[in-house]
Length: 143
Image (tube, rainbow, N blue to C red; front, side, top):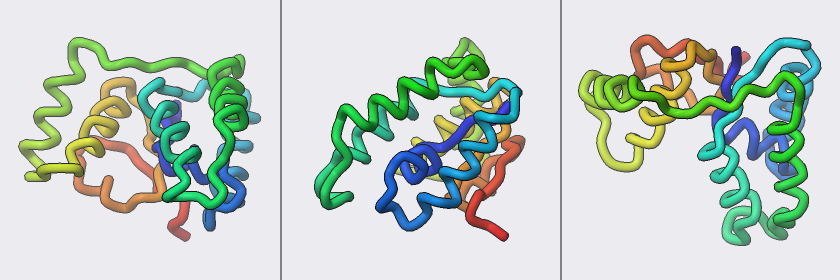
C-alpha cells in the first residue's frame, strides 16, 4: 500500500506547482490501479493549509477546490485511512534517536513512522527521507 507525502498531494492538486504534472500523473496511476492506497487526515489537512496559503501560491487555491480534491481521495473505494496506533510513538522516537534529527525535521519522522507502522511505501518528492531506517520510500522526482 502507498501513502503519499504532503508535497506529492499538494503538487498533484495545484496546477501552478512546478511538479504538478509528474505528481498528478503518479496519483492518477495510483488511484486507477485497483489496489488499496493509504490516506491520513493530518497529511490532507497540511495540503489544505499549504494550497490555500497566499504566501506560497498566487493566487492560492480555493478552499472548496482543495476540499473537493481531498474528499475525492477519502471517498475513493480503494482508499484506506491510516492513523497512528499504540506502536506509532515508539517508531517515531526510534527514528528521531537513530537519525539524530531535530527541530522541524521531526515532522518528517512522524510521517515516516506512520508509513512504517502501516507497512506503506512512502511516496514523496523529498530525498531527505533516505535518513529513516526501515522506511520503504520513493522520490517521484528522481529519474
